[in-house]
Length: 256
Image (tube, rainbow, N blue to C red; front, top):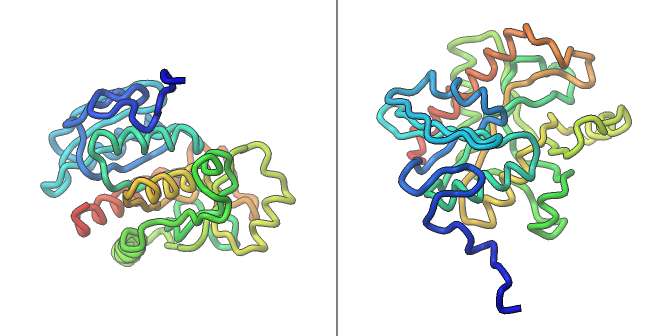
């Protein structure tokens, strides 16, 4: 039994196994898209861009935004890979995280391209059950959430073409197991949107003394029949870019 490995101590002060990033290669704040091919979308806003690593689903780039060093790392899909990304980024120096992803609307009037600011997550995942009591809340850092909402509203007034919504979202594990009955239940609970990562982000961040928030672009509306697979949906691409801009401005405003 003396050879048991304590995973809480594995990988400290060295290059991380999954994300392939080492201490000194990232900043104190990271933007977290799910898709590795959306990391370059973040880089479009940055100067002095450098690709640090791309291992498995985790792609990492750094650059400067208004003089502040920014990291962007993709989490992949779902809570397990998100938890790994957050744990390993924390071990190399990241202390604040903002997820910039896609999410499906669950309330009428939420349209593709709208911005969705998370006030907390319904933990319908298995990963966080391994971390915390079932009653432990999955909530963002309050200052980050409030600043995301404030800046998103300012951007909407100046730019238009989208709406800003805030509320409780759900984090599901099984994309294709979201039945009409489940979607209806979430809708009746007043859940604003559903995605697959934020509950792990919030719980791991809280347990590790880190800060986290989320702003997503609406990809579809599951109660109004909006198309989920419209690859030509320019509103969604615009929503991604708007969410990234809001997250970057929040990182600067709060000096994350």
